[in-house]
Image 1 (cartoon, protein in one colour):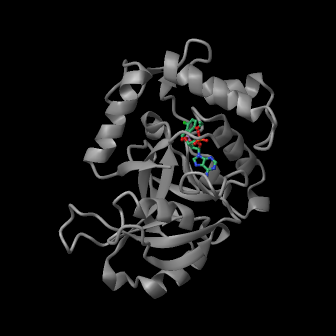
Image 2 (cartoon, rainbow, N blue to C red; image 1 turned 135 degrees about the vertical axis):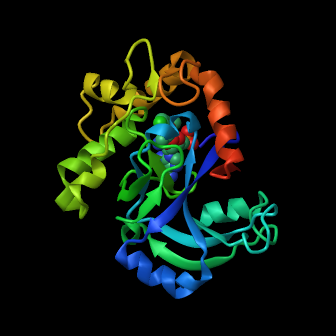
Length: 263
Ligand code: A2H
């Protein structure tokens, strides 16, 4: 990676229902009586696309932890939140004001990505209120939180991954429907219409999440969306993406559905 700082928006995707293997591990340390809220923490550079989330990815082989999330502004009773992310991300968070003691993490459990698959989580602002945790073999352990929320309308990587998962659901040990939530138009671009990522994947004949043309597709989609995109969904519909990005981000912060995370 470069030497610059990457400013992410960390999206809090609240767990509604754990997969069986995850439930066995998590309920040992956080029995239902604790009434703790647990969130998958997804790092994104495109908060304005959150209306179109259809699932959330973990790397099946990546090791994750369950970490206490400290919130200075919460009352003591409400200070009962935990996040799932990589140990590396938890350490970064502990230097950014999200742990009780600066530079120290509080790990409650360890889980491998494969165990998390099938968990149902809320997707903030999305037309699909709750979505499944699904595997993404190309997710990096050392980028962001290791968790990627999936927006197939605007991310070629995400679109290629859900297409693959739907095609080979049995192989991936998932239910096909989990990968087939409707792809909603969020942003319109002059060159690629209302579904930029699917249009690019088709045009560039990208056939798998490991296709070598994906990095280029990702660059084109990002530039098109950011510089030339117009919102076609949600309360900032009609606004250029360059304005909507900060407006949606602030809205997520105000609703406590996200917070800034840098690395
Ligand atoms: B983006 P950068 Cl709609 N492994 O969010 C692989 N990819 C990861 C990751 C990880 N550990 N952590 C974050 N990411 C993804 C939305 C989105 C994103 C859209 C379009 C493009 C896009 C929905 N997924 O990213 O290397 C996350 O996906 C293309 C740049 O730090 C995050 O933003 O620049 C982006 O990659 C961060 O990538």
